[in-house]
Image (tube, rainbow, N blue to C red; front, side):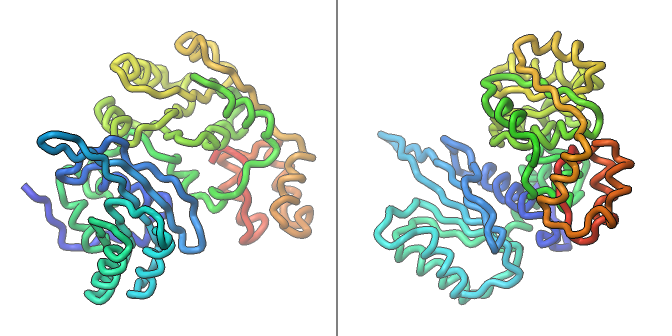
Length: 351
């Protein structure tokens, strides 16, 4: 039974990473397509907040299996015209290069028939067998499919289901400093990226444990209150290399759930953040984990971070704010920082 909705979902209200996640999850559940490698983001956000996604389809014939490459361009246009789409195709598939089997361009806006025709004709001229333009209307229809109910629920509140993991915690994803560089944690980042298995990040509240964990490519954060089946589906669909569990010492049952899922055959490393007081309880469950301890920041380090953002005269504007935080560049700080220093924001802490 097809679920219908009378309203078009506000895709334009999603952050770039959220819109990319919606497109990727819809693509992963595409009817009649068997994936050898699931859709995976490979590009970087640019001036149009675009993202590249690649995936490999297995097309099974009577005598052989053919691998088909898919390229997806996720673009954040408010309006899109035929020439915009032709430029996207030309940039995605350089003249003389091998074209993917399928080229999908996803935008959170509507498009005219002329735009559809221009995109199709240019993509086919470049050798694409399956060109698809996913507009707001097409994505809205896709989210009405029961297979995408969890995605529609999480990002648009259509129901009660939630995904098992997310790329970033919502508080961090919606932070004004989510894309700012992490400063002053070079040694910790090196240790984190050099670890080949489970990791235990230990530090006081607000010291930046979750923000540090976000430096891992391919990581996803366990969603609050997600059930085991939701997490298992996310592991299958998103294929994270690492799953981050925040405050693991206060949530040992969910740590046990991750360990059980791993025993069932899901391959991922666990990154557990915790306070020093509960670190032994977590270590008992992750005996081979690499431990990384992080401490609160010194005043000089807080000053260095502010200077790196280019905020002028920050002693007068935010000096008292820094002193009150006592070296905690974490969640409470990031809710008050914009008020202290104006429109320029920076990020170094946990939320």
